[in-house]
Length: 120
Image (cartoon, rainbow, N blue to C red):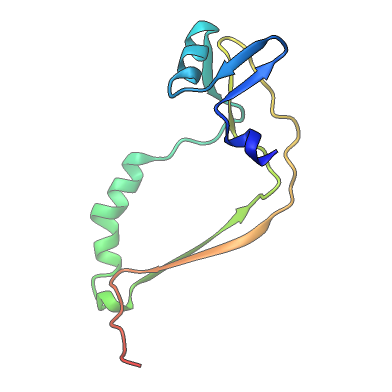
């Protein structure tokens, strides 16, 4: 089975399929297939983010040494959830169904400046 996976051609019924660099693009254009979002989501507030970075953040961290500025945030990782986009025929409206709620909480932490390394 591993040897078959390494091959670039597969036989479906009486037709051979030869994979190449642009086969997906040709298939998408021939059958009018588009890459679309399955579920919606809120758009980011770009102007608000730029205002925060340029005007608010410098005031908030102004009295701190940059080696003492950290950021931490947590997020949920829904490890059984399906992708939020898919390939579909243009004009169709695929539904994602019910999203599984199995998740783990992940925390990310960053420092503004790279800490000095100690010699061990």
